[in-house]
Image (cartoon, helix red, strand yellow):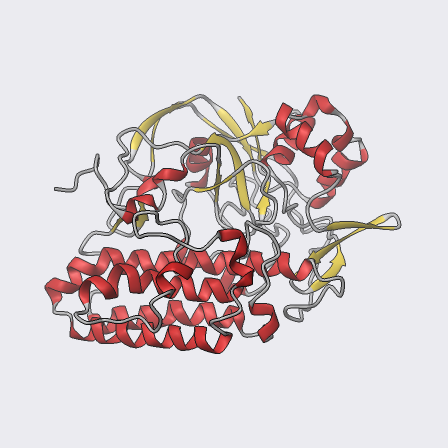
Length: 437
């Protein structure tokens, strides 16, 4: 029996999401199509490159998301199902130890075969088999499978965001600085940027975490009470112009602002600005998926680590929010930022001038919090391979909230808990300040 204390990796009530096999199949095709839309501008050579151990080649993402449906839905539920190649289970497993051995993560870029054509053929094979499964399911079987199907959708959407960020890193490593997609940039005017203001919230006992009938991951549950002291949070994200002042005032050379490990990281890696920034004379440029462009002072600063976000907050006389504070503040948020559907894949400047509500809490950049990624009270990791999805990573990572310009709109919500190590910069990570009240 599943209770609030023993949740599966994905929770979905029977009254949530698509109800018929036809609707579910259409949703399946929609999600799968978006992965291929992201890859449409690529050349065959682009699909194979792995620019660092934390990133994966585009071809691997396309295959792994197919492997996920194959492993957890097709093999257990389609009698006689056969994968196109017996070694795909080994090549495209990511970190599921319960499933079996897997190929070395840092060597995914060495997998020249299967070819790009073979990989798309593998996707068609899985898509056809899923189509048959969903078309043949009766209502009872579909209801039974729906949580796993919805998990597959959300898993692929997570990899769609990784596709974007991994492609950006890969292209940035090419001295030619190739353009992924042409872009007509529209900068915010000087009087359009939202002035930095503080929104204050009263303290008290608040309910934190997901509660409802729609999909969520297990790390968002169970909903539980947390006492929150009075706090204030910035009405918008920190901008490039504000971060430039931090740099100009010696932010990267003054150890008093930095956590000990952060200062050691800055020294050892030679950081002096956000990732992808380069000094061009007296001006800064940044690499984007649309090529190298001038840093827009009004846009949210992004591609910063937890260490940099925390140091900037100290320099500002503020701090980062806790994830519980962020969640409370998000309930009064207005004016979401750019999400994946905009196809900008770059954060936008805040345009709303409604000072009574925080803006950009959904979209543009993931917002670092000061909260370490740990289980909520009452959380228990599910049994089996899918129990490895979230629970085993609850160590040495920090929580980010809110989604980014690469996050699909249907994937994000205010209770969503993203998590990364404190030195990660290649994701669209940014800063929102908070302070005690």
